[in-house]
Image (cartoon, rainbow, N blue to C red; front, side):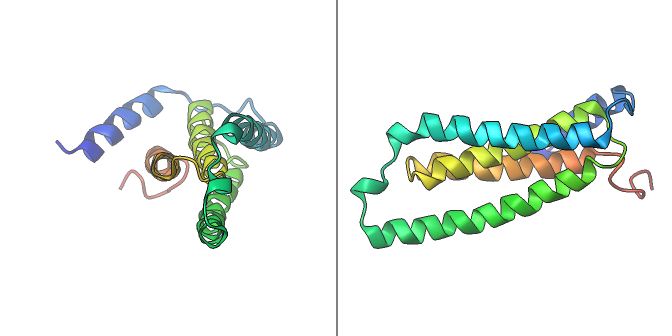
Length: 149
């Protein structure tokens, strides 16, 4: 069994056991996402500030690397907007938490990467957050009407 198959089967079982939850209105879920993203960015900026290596690098290299972070930021913004849209429709609480966690991991990685400290770790976290979004989306029964076919 491949790693992907085992991860998705574990997620499928966990999400199938959680009952649909309609007690949280979309406004509450969406507000929680925005608050979580803002708090993650602020906390990561505070933690990452002492590790910033931008001052020690060539200014042209800093500009190039930060331009790459901006491109990743556009990707993360698109993913966050998709999650924001998804939270506006009936969703299980566990799925909403999983989406929010994955988005926050990518946001934390972006803030970390902006300081140019430990770029490989930041990149791994960024793409890990996006991979988590894909896995959660794959297991989200409310996302696709063809899921059972």
